Image 1 (cartoon, rainbow, N blue to C red):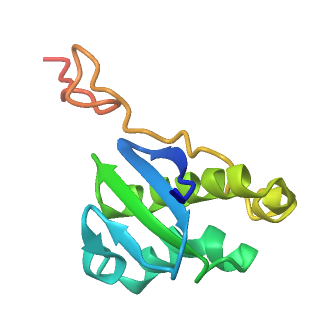
Image 2 (tube, rainbow, N blue to C red):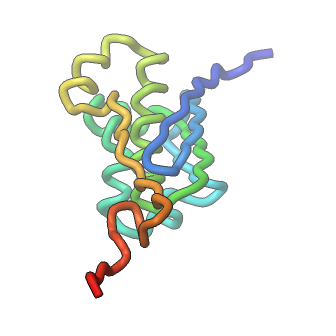
Length: 131
């Protein structure tokens, strides 16, 4: 019984979380049980999500299954990129210099700032009048 090895990794950006499973295969990419081109309609987001595989030259070698949740499409593509980078490191540590140079191993910490009490928003104040 030959069981294919699955490599798992998680990536986050803003409020999005991407869970990725990579298996040696033909290169099919499914995001939330849909094809990559179908889930990310904008080519920019497709390129962003697949960037780690493009840079390391492993684009057609793995079957990728991704579950993304939270946030918008841009955040989800960024989270998927980080998850793919981390999974590639589990497969082959020699890819680290290439991914590190492209800053694909860094989690983007930018989040929406919370609304503060006594204010209209995170930084916006209610209008002030002396009289």
